[in-house]
Length: 292
Image 1 (cartoon, rainbow, N blue to C red):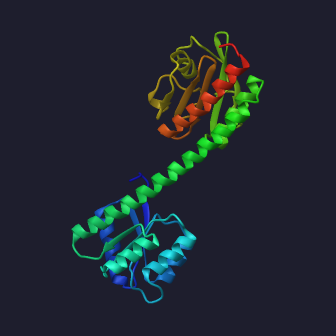
Image 2 (tube, rainbow, N blue to C red):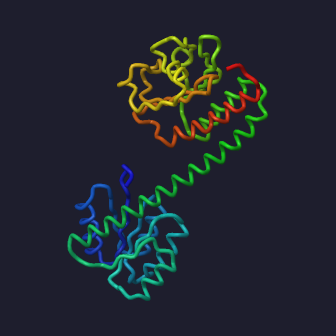
Image 3 (cartoon, helix red, strand yellow):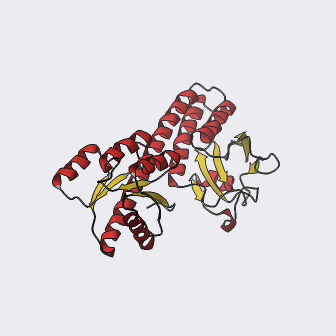
């Protein structure tokens, strides 16, 4: 499961049972934070007010049953996992639950082993949802980068192209601070930078033979680099506030850099998407006939 905690809403009209389930989940794993509701109406109100990563609900409740609550929750939070947790184990209920689109179906039981199974089902449901959401966001970013590539194809000036790429990195990839430097003789000269980068630090030309130049090293090696903690790395961007960085060579033309004020500010997917963006930039520079 992802590092961040999962927020779980346990719904049961028997308050003692709801508290028991929540207590066991808390003992079994520290990855779940639980809240309880003693009616479907209360549960729906909580779902409307705040974000939950999973809802675990009884079936038999006086105001509405578990599947009716599922339908109401889906209207409010279409993708939140919903586990029907019921003492009624009939095939009819299970079939109805599956047809209604329940994420999982767990029959109530007792004993620590049972609650361990429930906890694992909840964690799996949350993990699967997060993976699906991340994949959807990634696909949306890829589609947006393809649109950027179409705009890049119309650029006739390297500076305009680099500005377009930096804007895409900021708006599509959500990078806070980044730049593109292009080669000019034996130097890498910033061609486009984020608005938040100070001109007296990060925004500067560097010599390719400068051993302390992070950008120069990436340019010479022609390989992307991601550094989770710049404090453990000799070659780093100029500003000490930057704690992690990523750099992608623009094949023979220059280097793209992104920095973060957080340790581990970038992951593998960020690097892959940045490489896709810079592949479009390289192709556009090739069409312009810019000297490498």
